[in-house]
Length: 289
Image (cartoon, rainbow, N blue to C red; front, top):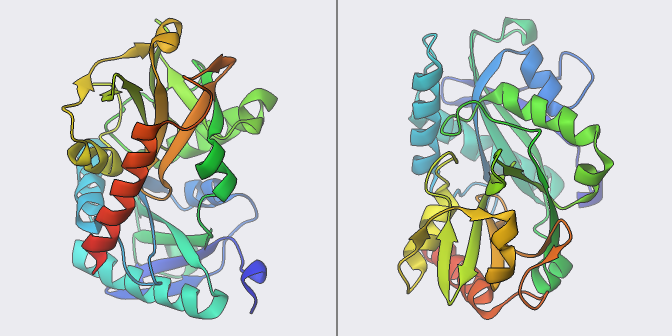
């Protein structure tokens, strides 16, 4: 099958240490299907060479923390999930010739609706990397105060459906690269699928609280030669900053050149952002060896 023919998405139940594929029990987006299956907590990763994953242990620890916070006896076996991920990712790469974007959901009960007693779903869809134009020229994002997360430290599966519906209802949000969440005071928090980092005088600035602790953001901050500044950036302060970028476990580091109508710095990806892109890519490559 050619890469362009790769389906999106494919679903697998984690049955012990095996990845057992099943058909979606209903039509709709993956968020709607997972809501139907009772998904509670989730994580997102991507494959490298089909069956390798960067910082997977960190992601599974964060998934376990989300399960604990949500309560209801949510639990999973990390080693089983890891082995099933390797199987599903390798199969996807062999059959479709592309890497996979992977979502891991822990459900509130067994997946009896699809004939399984498992409670973990792997959703795989094609990942072909971030567009070169976006990495070269940067992206435009839009802010929203309408999409709120009740508990920023928890990756709640239901919230993905909420944000999907908000974005679909707003042409402004649907057309931008990614919506950015702001609080009632106009402080920029994070993206709906990423963390947000600003640059001022070569130092990295990022929100100290009320955001998800990002695995990729942590790695980028550790790779920076300068100590980060843990402080909020408001919309009214954007003119004081030289650069901005988002961090995501699936996409890595992506430069931001405009937020709403505000041009960031020169309107081009800056030197610190480019340096962090290079450092992060080298870090991932070294970690996967």
